[in-house]
Length: 199
Length: 199
Image (tube, rainbow over all chains, first blue to last red; front, side, top):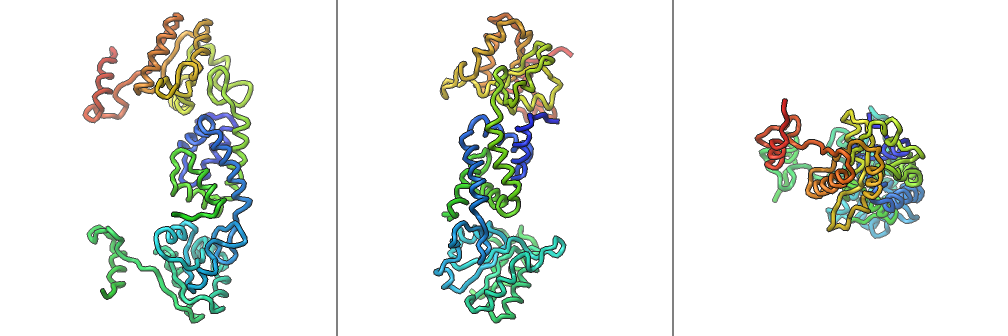
């Protein structure tokens, strides 16, 4: 087995906790930090501390947020009356970067998953329920992933909105742009056909 | 452009300084740290600080070293009289992990590269020269990479050793195990043929 000195072994272990980092990458990162970029490593170490201390969750939309005012809960966004529900902060960033949507968000930080013990409370759906009830939301856009659990979550959200008389929509699922029908999986193709729209 | 809050942007920037980490991976790592593994992130931040403070270079072999006694400069290793010269700490680890070699090392932390201003002093070759002159080294094993600069460095090291009457060897270059002659590049094949050995 690889014999590292204790501090080096600890650093490599710590780096391996990052997603997508295996033993080889962790070793490469550690050697890079120690050999070529000690300044960058110092910056990273300090920045992690600052981020952990300074970044919390927005109480309204559950996105990461570091000031009293959340970037995504502005009055201007609230005016649209739209709330887009996504599973993760990365999903929010993807919509924000690639689409013209500029309404509010609600980040579940997960999806309904009875097996993993994730129920409506863990996803903050009580809070979303209250927001739906107070009349400020005109449209709930459900953008959970088209996986089994994401679909179950979407169904649950739709029932919640309907019970409170709020319009609810689901993002379209179908053949991706640039995709070829021949190579698209059957489930996607069925979805695309049943979701056909007049042109 | 992606709009992150300031601390999040800084964290993502800091992560991007790691080798092999682009914008998407950095975002994924940052979100993972903030959302799922705050404890791991805290551990990483602290560990980086400890590693920077506690890990220096061994004055003898230039490998990373954190105590007065370097792991690779033990008396037992010195008894072999062998010193293996490698370019980087990762090369040392590769040899240590995959071969039975248990002699000493000398880590160049680079290679001769006049274009990048890396000369013999930057690689600590004055120190290696003194070690070669004092009679403690019986064999210098040159394990620099078979690149243009690695070969030039190997040539320089060989001349140094010969001038001091020390036996010098170069690790073998040829067809890699499991490789097929048909797909091996010409340079490697020429090397393999000229370096043929009696069986």
